[in-house]
Image 1 (cartoon, rainbow, N blue to C red):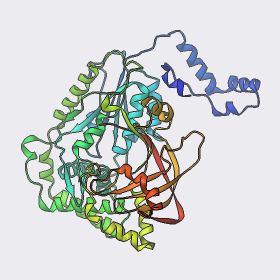
Image 2: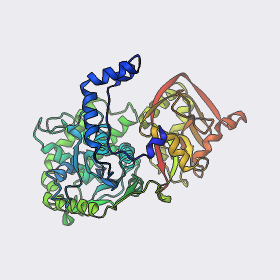
Image 3: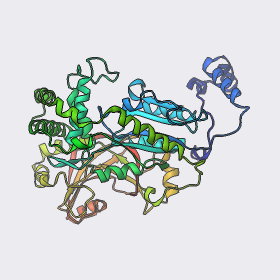
Image 4: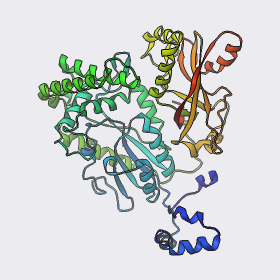
Length: 496
């Protein structure tokens, strides 16, 4: 099916799966002629057959790398073709995450493909784990990507980790969620939600270990092409410089630290009672400083005006065509194809090893001080947090081969088993055994693994040498008592 990816699609139709289960061609035709879904698809195909002109203009995907309470739904409310300066020749699709049941991106992709050159507003929080979904939607629909950024972002250190949003962002977002009447929110996140504050904090923590620069770099690698990011005022300029009250800062920091312990599968001070107490403490502090929090943000009308103006400008500057042979720029060329894993899943497996092998526990205890160092800064000893197994690397596989071999897998999950922990003073990794599948190639590296740790001056790729180091007596290996199942998601990593 790979060659079909180069074919421009005017219309997407679905036929019932049962049609493929008939015993022969005659039975299949008889089934389709009697099936209402099939008949409707054929009628749709007949209706479209008179017009053979394809709309080759690129569309636009507008999305929000944000968290609950940033105000995205208010910005998207009552948007029209007229307000965005669009003619009737483009469809405006405002897709609200809380309104769509099921697989959001699959449903939206189907509608976008049926409406070429459309402008899609993704009214949904899009954290880093969902960037690949926006990228695939943009590539598949030949649309430009437009990330909407909220002003005031700056690197914020909490414990040993860095976040791109400030605690003032977090305070405002929690305050807005708590102002929603109980049981009024479609997504069931309002003042009546028992753990509303911690849910917002959890979204805040989705951006853990991302500096502002790193986040912006990731955003700029999304899509077949991209408009310059649209920045919306989140803070009133005259109030942003004011200091956050000490008790509010302390409550928010403790909430983030609690969520971090939960994500790391720690058993210390993150139980149910701890969560109840921090939820109550954050709610109380936000309530006590409501006037201060309210003073931080500008009028909604100002933000809405800049949002509408910025989207309209992006639409007006879209080119007439995006040619098929246009390759990503050097900044957007594929660096690796990877199977990405959740940090908490791998940490849980490592912690189970630590409980039975004191030497492994001591290995990480000695390196605890480096947790929070930038995983991309090779001048530092560092824990790797973007956990993945490399399937193909640009130094060994051409761009066209990576696309043709892996494009159909991007965003899909694949099973693996964690079988052993290999380590020395320089680097540590988890050995993987990949599930066999006729549609999934094997990794280019004979040693399939997840790199966990690198010493100062050591590159992550040097973990490939661990098996040979083991044979030479320069590394150690601890086998899992039983292989641990884990699932990852395929993605392209792009050069920055």
